[in-house]
Structure formats: structure tokens, C-alpha cells
Image (cartoon, rainbow, N blue to C red; front, top):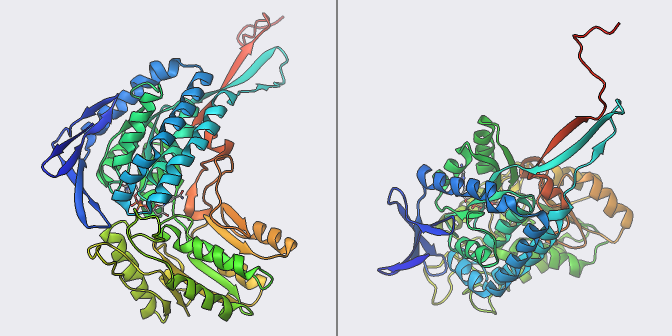
Length: 498
Ligand code: NAD
């Protein structure tokens, strides 16, 4: 799958178990964000590369994968989970070298995806149709729930293995085959996942990997044999993909961005709330879709909580993501670092005040790394772009509020609706807020919790459809209604009965 060319490791696409070179001879390089150095190159896939992968996925669908019983398919997904866990360290190193996220976080994700593959593997033979009671008693009507076909999976760079498995596990449990296009920032681990699938006994062609950027993604979205797109990424790309897929009436599951609020009420445990707000925004250097990037703090606690947040933010240890004592790594790309800087500068121009951070950070020995200080701002006007647009960096906007009515209106005043955190000891208030907040996930006295069996997805511009939970399998099935007349009575409307 890989060979050394000069200093850069060169990867081909992975199609039907074979490594394929670029059809047009186009490659792109990947940069390690902690060092700023190029280390690998990947195929810049075009329509011919994508077409080869889609054909392989179609052959596997009508061939070995389609021939397997759902139970056997499920067992293979579980075996795949075991293999990935065995290789978690290797996968995590590849990812950390591409997105600069902490090795420990990437390793934990590569370890935990086996839970997803056990869960969805277990669901594979629990997909059932039903018998529908029809008015005419002699008719037997039942439903068959069938795979859609080839699913195009497009994922971002922030949690490559985790998000790939979140998309592929339910799609494969439902009997579909996959063409995966990883992010151009983090392409390497996708090849490990595909290789391990085959080691686990999943037939070649069930998972195919094509690398590249936007053009490769567009070629996948446009391919007439791709039945559905499962996309995770920014809302801008999600809108573009939905429009393209819609033009040929292909379905989409979209897992998009967020501007999630974390609300601290006057009766909250301050220790827990501070820890929750802090990890909500600064874990993973803010590079998670569920980042709690807006904190609303009751006016009675505001000064106290903000002071503690600032102290804790300033104590976060930035550094080499491979070191166990590092708490925050760099931004994944030079473009993301620039976005952090630009959005903070724009907020300040609009009247915001920086309480902590706000600048590029220097890490000794890693001077070329894309490090950015954990940043807290306040005094942001409601129309400041920082209150509405996703930064995808470690940038927190804090605002005080007077009462529940006000904070519900503030929290919901965004195009996004991915998640929301509520910190309170008042049980009635907690559940009132759970109903009133417009988001796909509500966390009460916790933040960033997620499980394979609990549905996850966005309200409003944060997405369409759900991953995780039984709902996820439904996204990848189509229902057929079968009608069978069991009586011999002739039903010919053109024959007159006398
Ligand atoms: P991105 O949208 O730029 O890219 C995501 C993927 O889509 C990449 O593989 C990219 O090559 C591809 N792509 C981009 N434009 C495309 C187009 N027009 N057509 C087809 N493919 C296209 O996102 P990113 O910068 O890689 O990741 C960060 C974003 O992902 C953030 O907005 C974050 O909130 C979101 N995200 C969402 C979830 C979720 O579950 N809701 C999880 C993680 C990240």
C-alpha cells in the first residue's frame, strides 16, 4: 500500500483490495502540523479514480457482501472492531502526524470504535420488516428493508477513524458497500481501516478508499451509481453537497458544524460547570463539532466563573501532541490557525475584549507548529460573527444572563443546533431547558458525552439525519412493500359480473 519515494511516503488509492496509482498521475502532499514538515503524499483522485472505486463497491454489493447473511455480516463488523483496537497505537500515530491532535485522544478513539462495530454488528440481523393489515383480508402485505447500494462516505480531519466508523458501521450493518473519501488533511489512517477490514474477513471491495480534496468529494457526490452520501464536515460543504446530490435525487446524511451553548445557572455546582465549560471548548484544541464555543453564565456567578475559566485556560500546557503530558496540540492546518487569528481579530474590531489568549503560541523546539493560545473573549455584541460562525478552534465567547427566558433566546439565536450544555441542580429547570433548547443533543451537568447506542445529529443547520443508535441504520435502508393476493377470486375490472 505504501512505498518510499525520496523522503515522502507515497500512498495509492485502495480499491477492491488493490493499491491503485492515480489515473491522471496527480498527487498531493500532507504536512505534519506540529513540525510544519511534509511527510507523505496521496492520490489527488479525479472522476476515473472515483469511478473505479464505485465499480468495485458495486461488484462487492452484488457479489460476496450481498451473499452474506445479516448475522455473518454483523460478525465480520465485530471482528473488524477487534482488529482496529489491536492497531490503535499505529492508527493514532498516523492521525496525530496529520492533524496534530493528542496521541492519547486519537488512540482512545481508535480503541473505542470497536464498541460501535459490536453494536452495529449486533443490529445487522435485527433489521426486520413487518406485516401490514390491509383492508382486503385475502391480501398479504409485508415490507422488506433493503440496502440502498453504494454509500459515499466523506469525513473531516478532526476525528478521522471515529467519524469514519460512525458512518460506515450503520451503513455496512444495513448491507451497503462503501467508497470512503477521507479528508485531504488526514488520509493515512483510512488505508489502515480498509486493510484491517479485509484482515477481519470483510470481502475486498466492501470498503474502498479514494483520497483527494474537494474535487474528489464532488466526483463521489456526482457519481450516478452512488446511492447515498454520508457527509461529516462544515455546513458550507454540507450545503454544496446536498445541492449536488439533490440535483440527481440522491439522499444525504449530513453531520455538520455547531456553535453550541454551555449555560451555567446560579444553582450549578461551580466546580463541575467550570470543568465542563473548559473541556467543552479547549479539549481537542476546540477542533470538534460539539465544541461549547458560547458560554452563558448567570450574572450572579459571572465574575467568579470567568476568573476561574481564565486561570484554568492560561494553565493549559501546549506542546508536542505525542507527549503524554501535553494538554493541547496545534491547529491541524495553517489555514485553521489563520482562521482562529482572523475571527478573533474581527471580534475585537467589533468591540469584543480578549480576557485570555488570542495569539499564535510559541512552543519551544516546535517553532514552525500551528499552535494557538486557549482564548476567552467577552463583551461580544449579539451580531458579532464570533457568536454565529463556527471557529473550529479554542475560542470561547462568554456572556452573562439574567434569567431563563433571556438565556433560552440567546442560546437558540444561532443557525446551528448540534448540542447544548445546561449546568443546574434544579431538576425541573433542567428538563424544561432540555425541551426548549433547539439542539440534537442536550447535556445536563455533563458535556461531550457520546455513545454508540444514543442517536447523535443536528437540528437546524447542524445537519440532516442521525448517526449512532438504531436510527442510524434506518438512514441506510430503503423499504419495499410487497403485496400478495392469496385468494383465487378473479379481480378483473373489465369482466362484467352478472
Ligand atoms: P470540510 O467541510 O472542509 O471538509 C470535510 C470533507 O469534505 C473533506 O473530506 C473535504 O475534502 C470534503 N469536501 C469539502 N468540500 C466539499 C465539497 N464541496 N464537495 C464534496 N466534498 C467536499 O470540513 P473540515 O474542515 O475537514 O472539518 C471541520 C468541520 O467538520 C467543522 O465544521 C466541524 O464542525 C465539522 N464536523 C462535524 C461533525 C458532526 O458529527 N456533526 C463531526 C466532526 C466535524
